[in-house]
Every structure is written in C-alpha cells, then in structure tokens.
Length: 363
Ligand SMILES: Cc1ncc(COP(=O)(O)O)c(C=O)c1O
Image 1 (cartoon, rainbow, N blue to C red):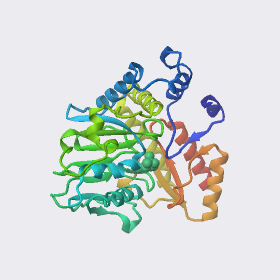
Image 2 (tube, rainbow, N blue to C red):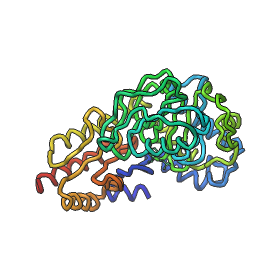
Image 3 (cartoon, rainbow, N blue to C red):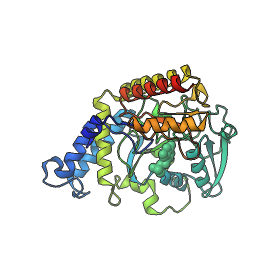
C-alpha cells in the first residue's frame, strides 16, 4: 500500500493521525499476519502473554532511554486520546477547593483548562487569546499554592511552540501530543507529560504518560479505578485490556527513532524541514503568516493567502500535486503544513517548489 503511495508521489502533511516511518508500516503489516512467528496476528494475541509483555517492556524502555528518565518516573500506555487527559490530570491532581494554573495558548490548552474547571479552581497563568493564539506569552502569573502549571508544548492548530519552558517551583505538566520526541529537551523539567501517539510516535488509540511519582497521592478526591494513575502504575498499564496494536506500533516507532539517531537526530531533521519551509515563507510575502517569529512551530506551519479564491486554488493545486492534509484547521482556515518525525525533507521541498511557482504566477 505504502509502496503505491510512493509511486503516486503522495506527500503526507496530515496533522494527525499522520505519516509513519515506512519500516514501521512494514513491520506492523507483517505482524498483522504473523506476529514474531507465533502463527497468530498481533490482533489476536492475549495482552497477558509474555509476547505482549515484551512489547510493553520494550516501549517503556525506549521512552526511558529517549527521555533519560530515572526511577522517580513511571511510563504508562493508556487508552484514549489526549482529550481524556484533559479530565484525568485534574481528577488525579486537584481537589475541588484547590487551584491549578493553565496557560491558555491555543485551542487544545483552552479545552484542557475548561475541562479542569470541572474539578477545581483554575487560574489562567497567561493567555494569547488577544491575538488569536498566534504567540506564546512569556510572562506567567499564578499563585505558588497552585497544585500544578499546565502548558501545551506545541499548538498544533495555531502553529506555535514553546522553545523555552517556564521554570516553576510547582509541578509542570505538558501536553506534548504534537511535538513529543521531535527534539532533545530536558524532560525532567516536567512532573507529568502526556501525548496521544498518533503524530510523532505511533497509531491512534493510545496515550503515553510519564509521571513523576511524588506528585501522586496528595488529594482527597475518590478517583474511579480506571482513571487512577496510581492504580495504573501498580498494574503496569495492564489494569484492563490495553490497545494492543496501538502500543505495538508505538514500540516500533520508538525503536525507529532510536535507530535513526534518537532525539538529537530527530531535532536536526525537524529544524531542517522547518527552516526550509519558513525561509520560503519569509521570502514570499504573497503568503502571510501571523505567528510570532520566535514562537513558530517546527511541527505545524500555519499560513494564508489573503485572496480567498487564490487560497482555494492553491489548496486545489496541492491536492493535484498529491499533497495530503494541507487545509488549515476548521476554526482557523488557511493552510497548515504538518512536518512530523517521519516526513522526509523531499516532501517539504515539493511543497516549497509549489509555493514558489504558485507565487510567481499569482503574486
Ligand atoms: C496538542 C493536542 N492536544 C490534544 C489533542 C487531542 O487529541 P485526541 O484527539 O487524541 O484526544 C490534539 C489533537 O490533535 C493536540 O494536537
């Protein structure tokens, strides 16, 4: 299937689920037929077998190596998308009469804070809503008594990204759904990280969580067992049937990241792709971007053509050229080019070639 895709020269700029590495697709496809010579499909194996335990152990070990985590941290693979974490984080870390601080930097962070307000008192530490979330506010104000500070490290919809994380004395929590494992960072700045797998690290259906154990057990709320982080840690992500196939694809993708050179190499590639795209954008005033230059996302570039008819024509030409997923998010409009780990530089080159020829015809 993917071979066909290559022959047809499709370029997958989807924002998520998005492009996965070809070796991962090949291994996953083989495992659908015969997983590790068991004679069974990966879709048929029991989650309490040694076969699956090995998959889970390998995935967790990869995460710990990539993030350079010590034993203070636990890694979980849980059901649900990142949206589940908008509720599960406050449910585990916030009592009704307590305060949590949230940065309102984009549509996803805004959803997270609204959900958290069902569980306690939310203080907005900083907001970029005044400019339609086109920048990352650097001045954060929140009480030292807040239980935690929540940020969305990459704003998938608006195309902004935190390049320097805030320093706090309270636990820092990051929704890293759209830039997880795209570069080397100091993961230990965070007490909790969560990410839906479907962009940089696998297939939809599973969340990866990294939790510093000392933040748990501090609230009085009664937490439903299936939502309880501590219980998931005790059960080793096997409290109930996990999304076996999605965990397997994450394990393969994590291994691929390590084999390709780890986060230093992923970071180099991210920078290379993003520089090519943004340098082109800056050289062609025909395309407009409203995102603050220093806050531009290396994962999602969001831009516009002011004349809507021309913008639609550009999107049509993208379609004809085999560019997938380029239309901006429904509430933002415009053009969005997502450049996750598995996207080859040649796809970005094809995009900038089209941008240049389109601008020279229509500017
Ligand atoms: C940063 C961020 N957080 C949360 C979500 C929601 O993820 P899910 O659809 O897996 O619940 C997304 C989806 O794209 C996202 O980009």
